[in-house]
Image (cartoon, rainbow, N blue to C red; front, side):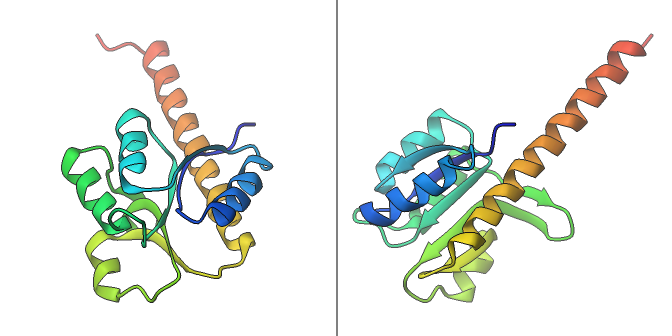
Length: 151
């Protein structure tokens, strides 16, 4: 079964490569970006189950990506059972992230660097599970509508 569709936004080439290889080894489809413009291009052209987002980028910040993507309508909050409305984004940062910023954007999670790779991989696996549950639910609803068409 295919994994999640993931956007990885990280300017550190060594870390980006390490994360990408770990995700791909678990059958996730990974698109990578090293700066804000590249990340926005990916978000405008595709849809992702999860985004791993570094905050300190060379051209702007990860917060800028979130703000622009939300304003353009290419990134939306989702309902996470028991957690309310959150962006399908995991914030990665080597510097302290203010609670005010987290409250402003409502990311799914925050992983301070250095983080255990297992934590990142668990979040990716959960994204796969959510996508599969959503696809199952859509398929079940389609089957019901086809079996019992409205009059």
